[in-house]
Image (cartoon, rainbow, N blue to C red):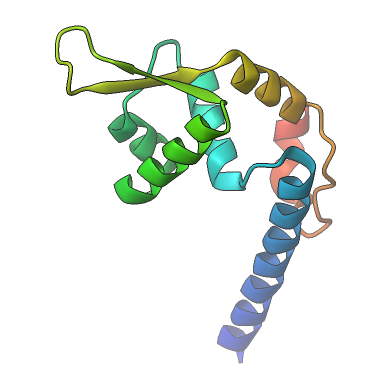
Length: 124
């Protein structure tokens, strides 16, 4: 019986996350995965490789590449080639990306009640 309660609780958390992500995407025009990459770039003091971003966000390398392509198409990141190794690509926030990150820092999307306890420390 305890296992069923756990599954039901996980279902409720999943629903809350799904609803939050839908609201987030509607307001900011980017997915949570795209936002995680922007966050990683904002928090980095230097340009980052796709491998670094994959590790920082716990997204698979192929999914990270897809997110980077989408963010680049949206004009939110800039791709540059390495000066020593021209095969190496680095990513940074564009001016529009920095603006979007600042916009996301103003909380416009309500965190579902079920998830609010997880963000107590993040709000202060």
